[in-house]
Length: 322
Image 1: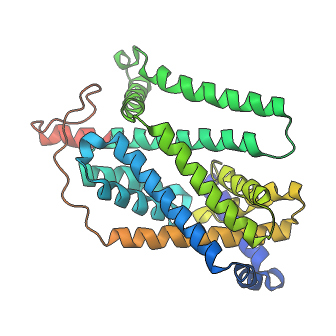
Image 2 (image 1 turned 45 degrees about the horizontal axis):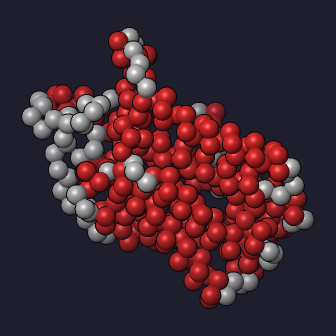
């Protein structure tokens, strides 16, 4: 409840700033700085980013997808749209629900996959931020990147290591199921890191290109603002649909480059509106195409997290509810 109140307060603060002295009128003037080529390249970058995310889903759930890459793309586009419009990160729930609806993936397996995706995203963004952030000593950059790489290497191996958590009861037994589901997710993606790095490279490049044109400034300054916005998205407290925190993160990252706070907030809001427009329009188009009937869930070969087709309805219901 406290987090929701803070999220609303952050978004209300941005709204109050926009209403003060008619600053919202300047958003239109900011967009006028863009030409057709800049917009076209930015849109193409976002579309390529969506395709790379779909490849990541297709890679991990290839046994369930049965070659239906288009369905994976639909899941990614609808999920992305929901994240950008549903308050308090509630849109994240669309991913496991769509996987169950489209491929019959059990909810624990789908939720663990989403958790691993988000961890991969965080690791890549933090590593990129450490590499390109201005004013940081190279030794500190190397230390930060090394720390991220070690943690990213160790975490999946810890999850897959033998453990006796399942023999316990209560909270420990439930955590054992989460750990096993997480291990299952990290085991199945053959090229997960490749898709994640490629996606973030393209996504941040598109945002940096657009932000540099909006300021206007060099591409390095636009990259710093884009990274600041994405790092703010990792924070546990988010504004409604990301409004407020996204702009504050970008504006704060632009300050060392000499961009005033007010100007930084204004161009970051314009970028945020562009991101939401791409997400909602592509998600709406994807929503128009039916996903098809999901196959019956099949037993997971290693973790046993999914229900077998012959299981009783009560067992399937318990599996979905866990």
